[in-house]
Image (cartoon, rainbow, N blue to C red; front, top):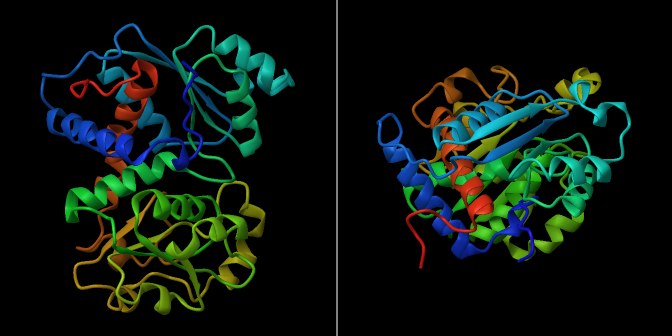
Length: 308
């Protein structure tokens, strides 16, 4: 059987996502009790990080440990990757010693090349192109609060960068409508938008995107690696803050999400992220449950408790 990787949301089927969310819900229900599964006992997850991380590292490392497995954290300064070893060589070696590998990389091409030469599953833990693990948490969180996201309207307000790209993929996979508002020059990849057909459209203003939305999502205006553009971005995004006035244009029961870290007073007002429509803390914790289910599936080839 060919090795399965998770480099974008397009790598799993709709049925597999339903099973993944069911498994994540079961893991969430057991969290905090002493009745934890040992499904990953004896398994090892390799974790390669070229960028800083809080939620991603903790959610994977803690999640695997709770299921009886182990995780090894690797940064460029700790490995030969940081000294110029070919990616293919590193992939061949590391994948012979662990059961799956997650990678947070500056360049999406690095993750794709690593996966080509890896003997075990590779999981994209964020690149400059997309962030599929975050979308697992976002969709799971929405459905825990509001039921199926299929047919719903989601508004993206901010930079058309990696998170926005994954929302475009998610609109196709999960069947929701996505309205995107970005400043001129910050639009998402045209090819990704075209592939999403009539599921995705670009709006001229945040108000147009948010009107009637069931879920409103934003992210920082300057992502990792874009810090030198910060002052320019503060000017360009000045009218793209998600505040109460903007949220009032959404549906009455709309939720607000942000993948964090957040800059209150910039992309989101404190009144929103700390307000009653915000589910950002559930969203952050959901990273652990959905990733546990993902790692189980890729390592074991099935979702525990759901074997046919």
